[in-house]
Image (cartoon, rainbow, N blue to C red):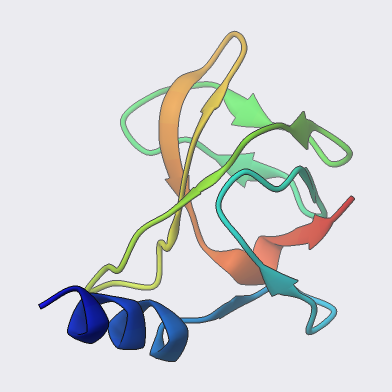
Length: 83
């Protein structure tokens, strides 16, 4: 059963805006102002996010992270670059 899980992890890859492969625990930087759904706050360009977590998602929001002052959010990989 463990071998099947490892194969699934290998198939599931997330690439940032520059095509670099992202892994859980990586640090990324926001490349576009992002409006937070259900809130009036905005995540600004250049915001650094540490220790991201990758999740498989039906919509394209594969990055799960916490941002100081905003909270836990999910982000689409095309709006970040690996730092």
